[in-house]
Amino acid sequence: MPGDGRPRPEGDGTEPPWSRSDPLVTAGACALDLLSYVFFTDPGGQHAVSVTGFLLVALAAVPLLARRSHPVAVLTCVVTLDATATLAVPLPVHFGAVLVVALFTVARARPGRVTAVAATVTAAVTLLSQSTGRTPPWQPAVSAPLSTLIVVGTALVVNRWQREVAANRRLLADRAVADERRRIARELHDIVAHHITTMQLMAGGARANLADPEVVRDALVTLESSGRLALREMRQLLDVLRAGDEPETAPSLPQPGVDGLERLAAESRQAGLATGLDVLGQPRPLPPTVGLTVFRIVQEALTNARKHAGSARASVRLTYGEGRVTVEVRDDGGGAPPTDGAVSGSGGYGLIGMRERVALHGGTLAVGPRPGGGFAVVADLPLGADEADEAAVQYEGARR
Image (cartoon, rainbow, N blue to C red; front, side):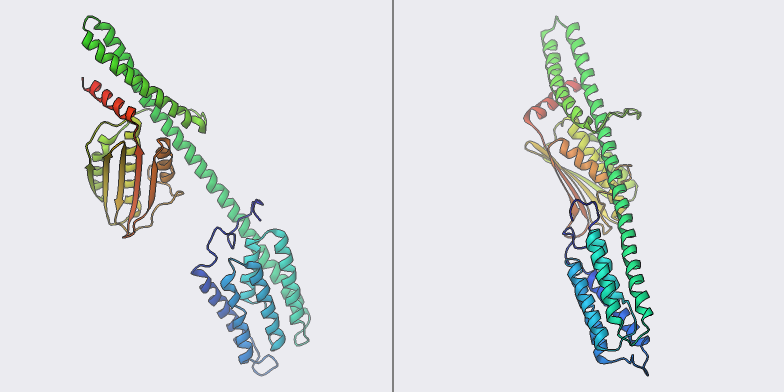
């Protein structure tokens, strides 16, 4: 039942109703019950092996194929078929593997009241069907309730363990998101501080050159563009800081941009991953926050490729488009791709950090396996016309 806080590993709609492991589970449980029927039956007594008994025991395992989508219905069928087999042919006292799997699935996938009813009915039907006078009455009276309690108790313990693991995983992911946002906030703070310093220098230069109108004009243009860009990035900074206000003790360093991609490719090659870098379109200055985002995405993607791609080649492609910039990092390796919960080599949850950075700029991020093998990370970041113009003006001002 949704909202009760219990995990839904079986038949909850979050997993496919049938998977490749179900036939294996069905076949394994069926094999165990058949072996038990063959080897624990007295050939010379009233519990002789028969073809009918063999077929009925095998037939009881068939409903397990639908245990994920209909666990209660499957348990009902298994209990009914098992009781029919016990009454139709002389079977020894048993609580078979098929019945264990069916009851375990119900206890894992359904709330406590349903599990309690299912366990009670299972124990009662098993006890009644096996108390036919062919065996001592104390055997089914002990084995049926005890086996039911063991199976249900094991399922409840697994459920509790799974809830604790899921809670710890969510806590780690939330903490990683908060750490990544604080890191982004620190980097944005450094960029804004750079703009404010530039504004101060340009204002001082304009005051010192009042006699030269051309110099004053250039300084004021740079001052104006820096002020607008600093204001926009300060607003972004305030949005990022919604994660909390814990103090940052890490020292501030100059923030990299697209100029550092060649260095990342060279470091990747030195680490053993053949890496190429291609730049398409007309290169132009990018806003510092966009350049930093591109750099971090490439850095994280190449780190994941070195960890997961094995012996492979990687390529980095930076494309300057009309009003946007796109960065792609692809590899042709066969290793397992990282997931959101995979901790990257940089110490944070890599894919979560990528999504946070791209979302900050209103862009899109596509991450996943490639059809021909390997893994790909593609980030598309839009650029407003005023952002591009201001970045170009700042670039020219820095050159002067």
